[in-house]
Image (cartoon, rainbow over all chains, first blue to last red; front, side, top):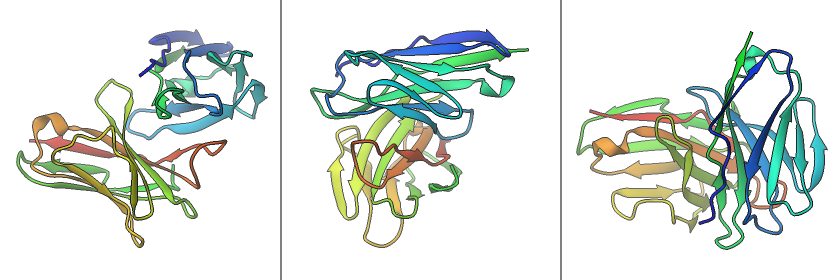
Length: 110
Length: 115
């Protein structure tokens, strides 16, 4: 199974922009890339999803290069409440299975 | 996460007992996924079901674990003869159908503790 990797952790300060990248070099051709946020003792919460180029919603942007082997979740002007673990979820080209990334623990400081 | 309901939220069992975890998907969703998450780790896929059918159980241990999604009622993840290593958070997700642009929506999980 190809690995879907993310940085283990990131630190930021309130008001800054945070970019979290997920590497998925064996992504299935037709699958979307989905990002989730998880707080302690809660289930993952859907943030954003995209197939290619750029997607933006009210909470985040998602940048996907043409080769789709990576994706970057962008959180504008983070606040303390954005402290959480962030996961990408993609389909594997060889197994056709959805695989969660290794997760990035974001800590936002005041 | 109010759409996908899991119960119980916490379950304590002694070694050798059975654990039953329930998941009611969001209204209109006929696809259910179960994941396991160990402390400080990511989510690992266990099984994918549609109504009355197991589509993919490749992530579920062959022994002691079983899952079902009957025509009526919630999906059930059953763990027989639990061992300490089964202690984890078990999450259920649902979607209206698989693939494409339909993201999975998760419940808040069942935390299973084995004494």
